[in-house]
Length: 496
Image 1 (cartoon, rainbow, N blue to C red):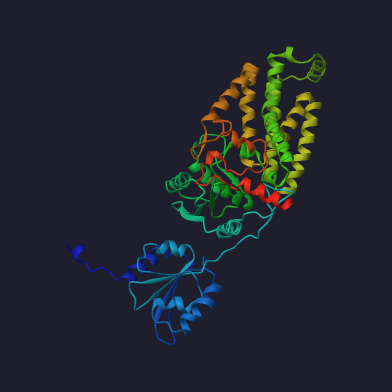
Image 2 (cartoon, rainbow, N blue to C red):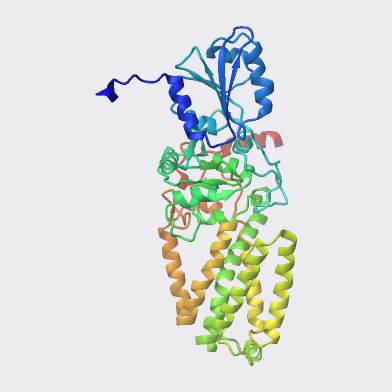
């Protein structure tokens, strides 16, 4: 009964004690007391020196509080030139606000109120060129690690009131700001609600990059295929928003996420839309051929030499026999050795500094390839195939899909060694079955091929002229991008 009848502490005393207990070991936690010279009002400053900008405090906040007509917290909005001043009676979020760079102000005469003033210190990297999605034609701006800057890059490209940005805090420790962006009146509300629900259900302690979100909210986290498309280009993010998709921006990440997405989108560069549709279609078909070649050429080589020698043309047989005359290894181990060497060179080149990595990749490839052929460990024909397969894999414009293609060559290689071309066909069926069952935000990953969406085929592995309709599989609220009849009529009137 004594505990129940114990007098409750004053609001300010309880909060200050709690803050001091939580952050007493942190040297950057500061609490300072001041007095207004005109009104004699006593007030306290509480903030983190490492999270707040001292220039804002010393030049914009303190002078007004010390020299202005300041007697209560409600006067702050008139005195201070800050757009983000929050007067709160419920201080349940005090700790989070302080850790987000706010300055907390307490007045001795107002025990049940506190003010929070935004004074965040931000170190923003300057806008630069896109490094992964580099294009010759089109805008050069790329996202940076600043959350606010990335939202600005999208907002300025879509200056409409329907553009909706909803922010969440994800991560029990990191409290990472995450924004869900969509265009109201166009984007399917089911897609938006599903993204929100998955973000709210994320139970993870630290989110440091958008790649974490991809793994945590994907439909099938056990699949090697990425089910959310990431991009570092603001123009691409704005374009997919206009199509009716949802964009996810994560604080601290220079890549934003696009969902739902399809398999074909991972093989299309945004530069394709800056080119003539005939040229763009040719490039996309070339990329599709490069992917198939990269995955299948080495397994077909192993299967043919191991089980199906009768399929080799007689003119080519002599070349293959002479190239493998002194090779002690079977085709499978020979191919596996070279594939692993290529992967090691690629990984070493990626981890080393840029100039050193390029040198290691070029010199290492030439030296090891030449030495292995001269030593009789590998044939020169297979070395050519391996080099072409590695080159073809780089034609994929999305890095994460590039990694998937690198991985897929190995199961195909093992099945080719087991059952020859039948094994290659069997592995292809397994892969196709997996892809048919795969979804992105509940939408089929293989569309418009399965289920067939003939209208969406115009922007898949080929790119026809701009369509007046948005993609069917997105089921947007407004399916029209522009009215073709009005465009033709306006063009005809101009010509006349």
